[in-house]
Image (cartoon, rainbow, N blue to C red; front, side, top):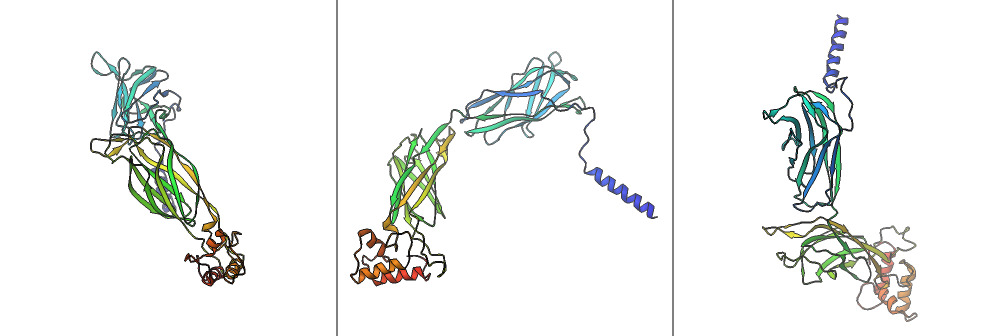
Length: 389
């Protein structure tokens, strides 16, 4: 009985293992070889462009059919068209599966020639129309196999892929800048290169511990500002040409918009003991600008689309935070400590004079006066009782 159970379990395990095995490949099936080639001279991937490729068979093959799947991005291209077959060869494309089928065609009977030889050379021209302009994409012919009249694979062929690059796209580039700010920072946004656009999204990323987005201002009457979205350390602004319905692209290179930021005062995040050496006040920060969703056309429904692909280049804005904004750092040594409170007390007691920069830093509560209230706030900040000045 034990032997019977052991035997039964072994059989069940064998069936289980066999059940998950892939379909075996015929031992006499030739290995994958370089028999297919996809070629193209396409150099433009703008809206409505026709991209053509040639599928070539490198050597004749005796088979009933050649089958394979056309790989392409359906968001970039419409379904392809197959044409320009050699004499007595026919092919078609199945939209649902994206499978292409090629077979020898008997022109006398108007039917398949059955088992025959597919000739060496060009099999067909593959034509695709661009429905979304892009900078680059790929088109390939995959899982190619030669089959007999019963549908059995008699030979596999290689995958072949072509990477396409749009050399006729447009380049748009933002200009870098270096600016100085005090309590607020105004960032002018302008272009170094601008072939013309109907709409785009301007994105600015920044250090939210140093800056806070305040507003955006239109700097050119030829554009309008759309929606603005601000998050922690990032803001996006939609910019459109004219009133949003004009047929003219905006091609200006002057300042388009001004982004306005408020300077954030340094925050004390340490304890009393760790704060004994004061809090560092960085004088420099930066704002990184980039472009997204650049478009250059309105369609018949007045929705913005694009005829060309855009290669975008962003820019960095270097921000120098002037001494006037380093609130509490009266002696200008890049930290807030007891010496700064002492300076304020000495000034209040007429034992010390302050320069205009020192006075602005000492006026912690911004009431236009330097007195013991300011000294007290510096002491509270130094001792960790308040987290900002």
